[in-house]
Each structure stands twice: as C-alpha cells, then as structure tokens.
Length: 286
Image (cartoon, rainbow, N blue to C red; front, side, top):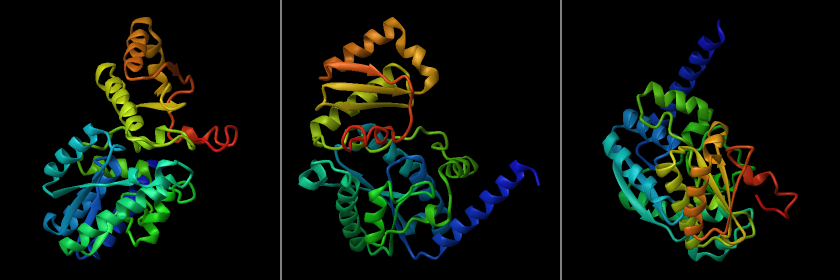
C-alpha cells in the first residue's frame, strides 16, 4: 500500500473511532475557542449526536483575542449549534497572575469549574475539550487540570494528531481546516512576569494589527520586561517582507504607540512554544 493510501486509511480508522466515542455520549458541551481543533470536534459532535444534544461553550477573558470571540460566534452559527459565552475570572486568582509554570493549570481549573456549572445547569452529560494526541500533558498543565475534573478529550482519545485533525476538517468541508493556530495570549508572556489585563490587551492589539494591516496570518508578539520589549515571530517567508524599510517603520511606529519601547524580529521565524527554548537559560522563562 502506498504511503498516501495508508495515511488516508489510518485517518479513516481514527475518524471512525472518534465517531464511536462521541456516539457513546448522551449529550455534550464542547469547550469552543473557534480554532481548528475545537471546531472539528464540535462539527463531528453535531453530526453524530445532532445539534440539539450539543452546546458550544466559549470562555471569555482578556486572554481571548476579541476577533476570536467573533469567529467563535460565526462558526457556531455556521454549524447550527447553540453557543454560550462564559466570562471567566482567572485574573482574579494570584496563582494565575504570578505566572509560574503551572499557569495553564490554574487557568483551566477556573474555566472548567465555570463550564461545569453551565453543563449541570443545562442538564448535559459531558464536557469535552479539543486536545489532540500531539498535546503532551507533561508540557500542558491544562490537560492535567482537565483530566482531574473529568473532562473528555475525544480527539486525543481517538489518537488524532493536529495534522490529521486538519485533514479531517478539510474532508468535512470546515472553513477552519487551514486556519493558523492561535494560542492563549498569556503564552506570549514569559514565566515570572505577571499576567495583567493590560499586558494581554497590548499583545492582542499588536497581533491583530499585524494580521489585518500588514497581512501576516501567522504571527506572535512575545512580550518581555513588562511590555517594554516585543519579539516578533513571523513565518520565515515573511521575514523579508517585514524587514522592508517602509513596513518595518510602520510596525515600529504602531507597536511603540501601543507601549512597546523596543521592537525586535526573531530571525528563526514563527514556531509554537518558542518561549520554552530559553527556559533553562533565563531562570524558568519560556
């Protein structure tokens, strides 16, 4: 069997497993960010169970970019499923604000508690998250929080990797099959620097402007020294574009207007989890 045929067959088996796992559920609320993984999970839940037995739940806080909330609303309407937007208060918890290596655990613990209240109020049977087989619980404390609170992870349980979820989304005709990944905004701030609403808003506004006005679909603005220095990560084929004098000057002017004093470009390009790279060298930051 050719490699591509084998991959299609493997994906089909995993999709069948996913549908079987979801079919065992009486009803489900899906934690819904509007990203590729949660959209794929939500879509399959609607197909298997029917939209009337499915609810989308979006946790809303300063760590969620405003345009992503708008996207979640639009995608829920596209899939014909009800959406509840839940304000969450992780910024009220000192353990989250101090931003140590367990930040994601505290964040997810707060969000899951709020979601379970809605699940129970609505009389639903299950809460599900869109973690995949690529999400290693050793590097994702949020997964540990979900496991402790009885959250199901059907994509992960079916051993679907992120690239396979995108392939499945394409097969299902979902508009998010090629959507750039967009992690929680708190991941832009290194461990040890406090998480504040102002810091998250600064990063959100910078990234939104870079996507909309400069045309950079995949970009990260890593914030250091309490929002005085920005390290930009763009895809490697966009580095030349960003370095052009007119574009560079526009970027510097805009980011300085948002409060950054120093604006730098990472020549290694965009990569998920880059804040982990210097953790040992800089005292635990990522």
